[in-house]
Length: 341
Ligand SMILES: *Cc1c(COP(=O)(O)O)cnc(C)c1O
Image 1 (cartoon, rainbow, N blue to C red):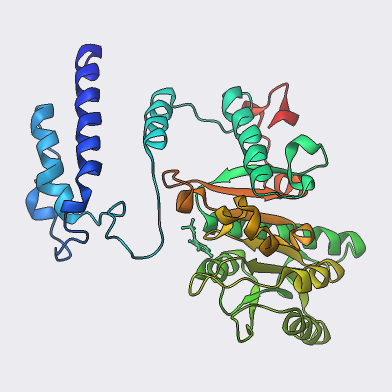
Image 2: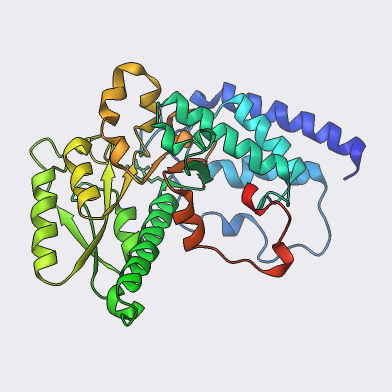
């Protein structure tokens, strides 16, 4: 495909997309195909000879669309809303064209700097305390993750590294494995399954805190679990609170839980994947009260904010905790502005 054809095909694709979205309500929202429907519609191996682009495009309606669940349909009420928008689709095109790999400031400065500034904008929009914002120069800042599951995992691993280092600083004879075997994380029995998975990957124990009659995690239940576990020789180190639970959009009581986490040296991560966008509205901000006790916070613009999947935004109060937990510094990636990202 040359530039001339790309210009033509690009315009055709935009027309196809506009028509798809404009008439999406006329498509059956969920496909009635059986597992394995797709393979018989296409060859077993990649063809030796290329097909024309027209032939390839025909496969969208012949092969792909019959198996698509139309998440953008007005009749789609499963899982959660995963909005998109025209600006978001166009931005995906541009980002596909620039196709930079922004693993450090030097690998494409605009990539890192735009991310930092946008996360400050978004953090201000939902009224995060300024310690979470890069512009406050108080050690905090935001980063874009793929998903909320990833943010939970990152926070848990950073918390794990932090507590291991603290314990080894107090007692240099302690082996990492000894500490790891005693670490215990907490979350409510209403938390998203990604917390359990993070704990599984992190190789630590987890205790589910029973929620109250409003399905919220409360301070007393956490305190009781922490005290029991400390008495049993375990090391409580992490608590994941949820603002807007998956089952019922319940809100954990941060004002009760936060002080306990701070006093007991538990990293408090807040998973607001679903409901976090609501904090843009001043009338819902009271649900964020207690955020000041948290170490990290994450929500999903790819749910309610008309941004294509995947875009999950995470803020940490001390970015050093996250950076130092995952730091590797191979010589081929070193550059003169390492502090910039
Ligand atoms: C949707 C959701 C998740 C998972 O989000 P991903 O971005 O798909 O990982 C986690 N927690 C809660 C509360 C959610 O609503």
